[in-house]
Image 1 (cartoon, rainbow, N blue to C red):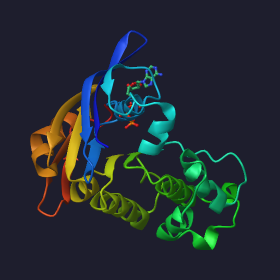
Image 2: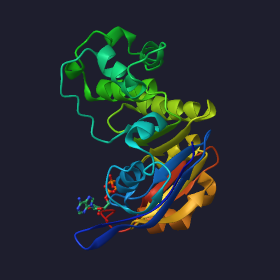
Image 3: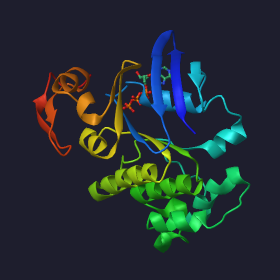
Image 4: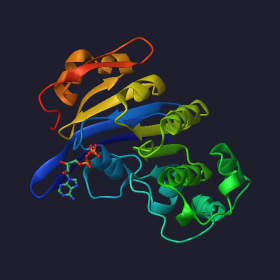
Length: 244
Ligand SMILES: Nc1ncnc2c1ncn2[C@@H]1O[C@H](COP(=O)(O)OP(=O)(O)OP(=O)(O)O)[C@@H](O)[C@H]1O
């Protein structure tokens, strides 16, 4: 399943997405980057068909049931309202498959190193542990596409690296992965391609080194910085206050 979308969204008379384009092919990990308020979350939600939008999206065009089998969605918010055991929360990922489970739940628990927590109520977890549970639930869904909105937020440094490593690995296994991130160096190291959004428009897309030029880092991120060989972001300072 290939995600291909070009979408516009208006709120309160203002265009918050203006014909923003995104494409994710099977087997590729695409990083969605952009400053605060660029429209990353809106683009993901519109591409999934979760909010009204103008334009087209191969995902939004599907029926609800087909879409739930086609794409797993990891939103930025991580609410777990009920004190279900971790194993049952992860098993909810199997709902689009009528609850049928050929070991996907246990495999997802093991992959996220959650077996020691499997019987713990999911409401009795730290923020980072909860994030891992929701990543595991998305994995258990076993969908060809995975869209994740800042999945590394709230994880400790090793957890952030592990999460991006996992998403890149899922792409190697054949899924299409779209992941938004504010960690430009990590996104550059792990993603095959970056899509840079600003002001609701796709302003650049391509291999990380081609997208993250010093001129774009200054213009779109207010950073005096350059991307070094190996994907390390060398930051000398910020332009202005750095607050938009
Ligand atoms: N319901 C809404 N009504 C009006 N404006 C909205 C609404 N939702 C989002 N916006 C605006 O749309 C713009 C894009 O928001 P969005 O959350 O998509 O950005 P983002 O790139 O994900 O930002 P961040 O990196 O801060 O999470 C922002 O300026 C935001 O204030």
